Image (tube, rainbow, N blue to C red; front, side):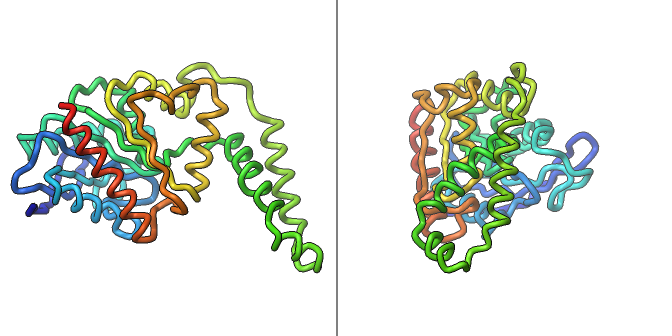
Length: 285
């Protein structure tokens, strides 16, 4: 299917949001807004956002990828991921205005863009929101990072034959690793008591996921520490208990992939998972 791409500029609380709309010649009723996170803009690492938007537009799904305030070509001071709900709402308005056929929208995000999308669903009652596509969501805390490092890095090293051979030959500098392990253990020992509900962005994300009535695609990179930390949080924090087993949530793990799906084979796997899920969501209208 043919599609066109056009730049759009939309006002947002006195500033201007710049985005690119990929619009099929015959758009359907389901569209997507890409929420950009971190020190990133609408193109994405390795042009990931561009390529995914074009893949979906080629399949008939209009896609708007935009820079929130303070990032890329958008004006204003940089906004943190947990404070861009107004920007996301404006982007949704823009997509529906530019593509009148669209009736339902999916929010897609990577890393803290995924966290921002999930937080938006909890902060705004938006009937237009049909689904969330969350890639390697960001839930960083000192405690979960420490548990993740101990569980996946230090334990993994102990099982590597090359580690023991280097250690036996005196080729391994063990002091920095021991210092890092000690710092992680201290972080675990100093973990604060359980927080009150809604007191942290991680708690707000869990509550938003629990209350979200739509469909969710959780896409995780198998070799990404951000994804591993997310799973550690989901398994250890009572607020997240059972959320990944909800029937409305579909989880896809991309084998060997890194955080940004930097290889073509990983990007293709992620694109196919998103495309298949969008088709499923389209059929549930």
